[in-house]
Image 1: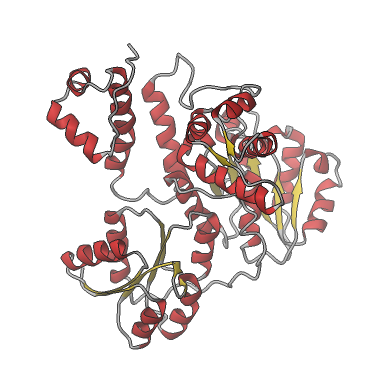
Image 2: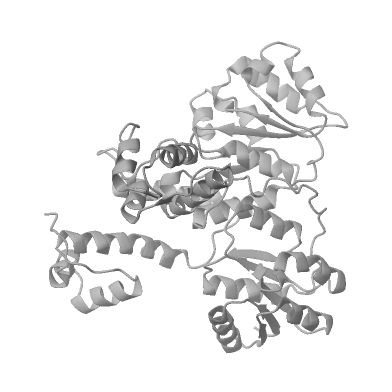
Length: 456
């Protein structure tokens, strides 16, 4: 790489790591913990690329972007942030950030994005209309730090200001309608109506005309398109083909795999191909276990803001939450948290209280529990396909092989250690690897080794 990179982050460790990595790659680096200093450097004409955190001691990095683009429109800005919400990704896109990465970021990935920014630094960024909607960021429970959610945020930010129809797929309770609303509220159509319709709204011949009159060129969301009968599907096709000056943007939600429903003859091919301009797959809670604590804390804080008691989960109660299957996804999680907040006898919610609440709900059990007939390779393939689908037309960040191996190796070694009572010699023999290799993997993967009761 060849160029000068300006780094702004209040974390000294991050500044040091980025400075060392970028310097080794051939760049000159200026690093600071102050946005004021960063803006002074930008004003002086320094830097070919900026890497900036959002929350800084003297301001907000996103709020500085319009000034940077005004003064130096050809200066790419890569935003890094520990605020792992969909709003951060959307606001970064609206503020014309060159790229956005959540913390903790993958260093090789950030280096490649920086190299690409240096190569394209003479290409002017696109100009989008800034959002005028100041409501909603605190209310949207679309939060998560897992790769699946971060990929979802980036996809939403990419399709937000296009006119492509959007098909939003996911299980009940994952937040499909919230995704649709977020796309509308932060798009160029945000000042126009957002109308949700079901099959009942289109059941008679005049239904489509009434719906189009209501939406007035805004956004039309068709709820659970897979449940609509063929006759009404045909009306939707004709409605989507109606020419005019105030054509709405069409979106639809579905709990089922519409491509499979199309192959089975339950969804019209012409409707499927019209709706699937962009497909947004919303992951289930089982596919983002690391977000459960984040969501739980969010709901407990919301309850406290609403005047409820201050509550928190005990460590073992949190483990029960992470081990539960959550068939109702985020909606079920919020309901469970609200019930526990009201019924808990103390400020700290106990394991017994969580077991009592979840024991009365369906599908209590390990997250990875599947049918005995499903092969491991089938399950892995299903999750990997979903991961690729979340990136839409883009490829996942480089280094996928290493990330997937780490995801598999960690649980495998932890379970094997537990099964052998923490005996590393037996564990190495069970896994069929050298004991020194096992020790290195335990260190690299930060696996805590304790002597536990054998499981076999």
